[in-house]
Length: 142
Ligand SMILES: [Ca+2]
Ligand SMILES: [Ca+2]
Ligand SMILES: [Ca+2]
Image (cartoon, rainbow, N blue to C red):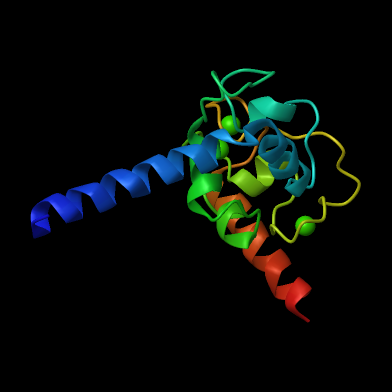
């Protein structure tokens, strides 16, 4: 086998393996991923997907789901400080955990907006939310 054929075979094998890993246990992964968000009501699966009961065939990710995936499937301050759907509300504000430490803001029990959908996520400008998040992070660091 020449070098190009071997390289091509290796690439094909890698793609097949990656696809198999992605297909196996997709639903379980979704439930696990959902458990990583500090506040999930009322959007639940819709926080990350385009459908409210995703199965392997239709588990299309929304823009926040893609960012979550790109962030190593982690909910953290990095992801909280982004505005995935570009609606002016940071992910952390929409999810209800401004600093992204995994604990809801105060006694928040409902997401303020959907982090993956351009929507009305409450009052306040992005600058104010950013400032608030920064201030909060400073206090939390102590
Ligand atoms: Ca947003
Ligand atoms: Ca928090
Ligand atoms: Ca939103």
